[in-house]
Image 1 (cartoon, helix red, strand yellow):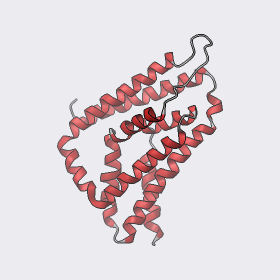
Image 2: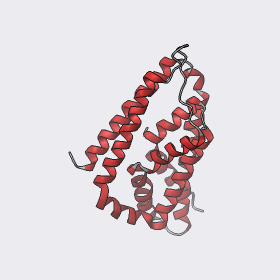
Image 3: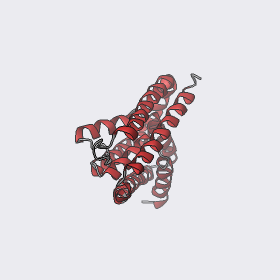
Length: 208
């Protein structure tokens, strides 16, 4: 197999996923809280791989037509959810600690809660489809035969490496977050990022 498409796919995939968004911030928080880290990393990596495969298989062209027809509703609904997620982090700033001891207790989600949040944060995000199904799918058209799948493998490996580094890297740093002020700062930053993304989605919808 020609290594060039694999390298191209890895570089593109890594550059697309690098920006901090709702999904990435959730994985970071799960890592810092040491709460179902492997589940979070695995879900995000496998979801990206699935969408990349669908994009390379030709779903990108269909997805592009669907987004062009309904992009306003898609972006507005995603903006509402992201804003709600931001509010939940803002609430954590004031409520996620023991009132009697003042010890900070980061939210510990069960497996089902973790999967539900991961599913929504991944698949209600319109940018994940634009990046994987549409962009990666369309760029893959320049390759032929085995090179197409080499490109897809490279992009998928980028997601795997990124989420493993993100989740378990955060877990390794969890000792730095053993006080309520650190968690309050983190939740405040995440809430700010979520409100920014929500505003950006509303702007991109073209309604205002």
